[in-house]
Image (cartoon, rainbow, N blue to C red; front, top):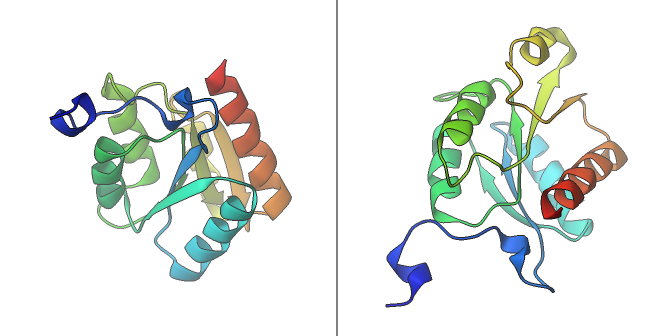
Length: 142
């Protein structure tokens, strides 16, 4: 069994010279999730999706992720709770996290305790999302 098969943790997808960066997109609204997924795919990212924070935890533990884009308010596990989980896990703690929040939930951006790398307000514009994720991928590649 290879090292990848024996462990649920793998190195970030950006380690290979030609590898496509991978974004974990977490959004409970199906139409918003699909819009963001297509936007990211058209920007050259491989996109894994999850409907809530609990599902996202499972994906993050079993996949090589470069950036997480998560909604703030979701059933089962909020975006902030997902971010806290990622930051506490040694294999996932350095993954950049973008929190999507509605204007009515501005408090989410002030209560994140420095665990969020970027905030975007809904409705998210395609260019805004592409620019934000691009900067975080570039920064994480060093």
